[in-house]
Amino acid sequence: MNSLSGSCLRVLVACYSHTGNTLAVARMIRDRTCGVLFGVEPVEGYEAATVEAVSRWELEENLLPELRFSVPCMCNYDLVLIGGPVWHDTIPAPLRSFLGQTDFYGRRVVPFCTHERGPAGFFAEFAKRARNAVLLPGFDIDVTRYHFIAESAVSLDASLAGIGIPNLRCVGM
Image (tube, rainbow, N blue to C red; front, side, top):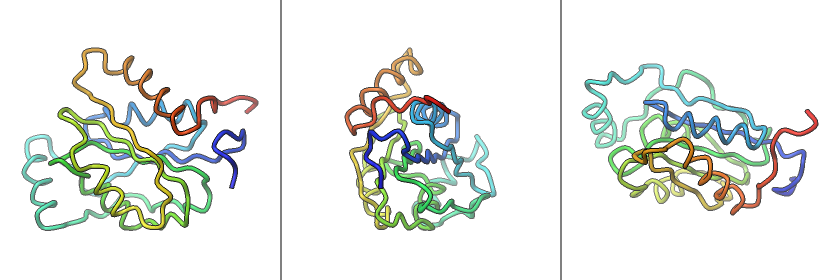
């Protein structure tokens, strides 16, 4: 496997995003790493009016929604960044479904989340479900900040540098 600072690093950025906040962060990560963006999407989407109740029910009953797209083979990537919003202080059901269908085969995995009140149990639950992953430190983005996008970019650059991928911007492609 390539080192994290290598120019040929193959990166997958996977995310579930209900409102678009996590997707905005995932796109920034993709742009900074030359990664491939994969959307984790349930076949049945969530209605805005019922998302709170339905997502709580899925959590309580440990229900995992069917995903619209097959999970990509992790063997094609050296580094995988996976994100989602914090729902009910943990990982949302579509992301739990994605993790349940994925064997990371010893790949380096970085979890990230977006939230309004802190990451709560997101990272601990992620660690339990990321089968055969070599977990690197994750990071969280507070979406309640007034300048969410601009502050996220600065925070993201620092987080990526902290795990050793400061300068992977798409050069020579």
